[in-house]
Length: 129
Picture 1 (cartoon, helix red, strand yellow):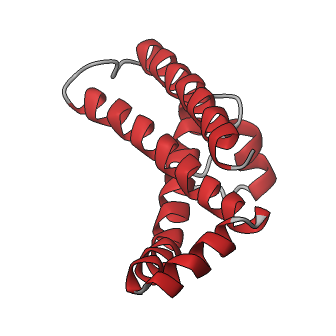
Picture 2 (cartoon, rainbow, N blue to C red):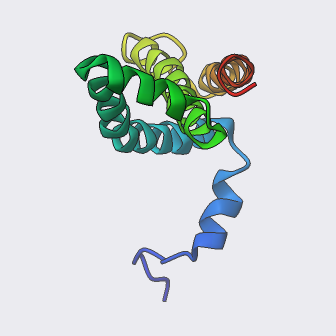
């Protein structure tokens, strides 16, 4: 007798299936980038608040921004924002009927991944280097 009950897959099996599709990769990264942006907004708001509080606070932020770790954190935030924005535009276009079929969705996801990669590399050069 064949069971119609759902099968629980291990994380390895889920990743093995999903990492073959650009649509799945874009979807997973879109969620991950949203979490990254959400978690780093308070940190960057604190830095902004500190820099606007007084001339001494601005000088402290300038000193902090000379460190590699802080510039890297800012880059991670910007990279998450770039990808989340581009993937969000792709989703909005799909909501109005553009690239919502299987093959055109794959093409749109691949384009979103490529554009995001270009923007993220450019942001790395601009912020970190």
